[in-house]
Length: 124
Image (tube, rainbow, N blue to C red; front, side, top):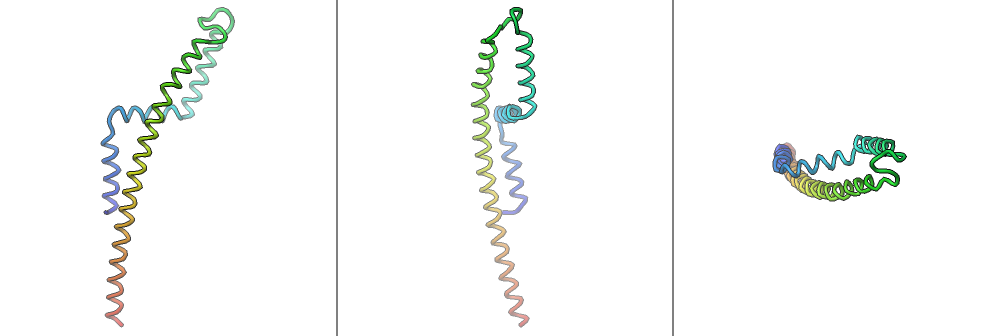
């Protein structure tokens, strides 16, 4: 196995992703980012400020907001788990390809050493 084969395996793995797998990875990536945390914290702050007192549509204890937060968590958790499972599969395939590459490199090094040994024995 050559280095190019290793890179081709990586490219082929990326091409084989379905649209739903791409979406899952994108959602998991965004859901685990600082941008998501800051945006979510700002949204909650706006929600609380908008609904404080008696004038809001979701007064304290913010039952509708709690329901929405639980829905986000219930949807986000399995998406993140699917993405992690896919990443684990990719890592396993990458490790297997790397192992094959290392094994092929060792074979080539052994062959080169044998050739060098033959050349050295001829000159001696």
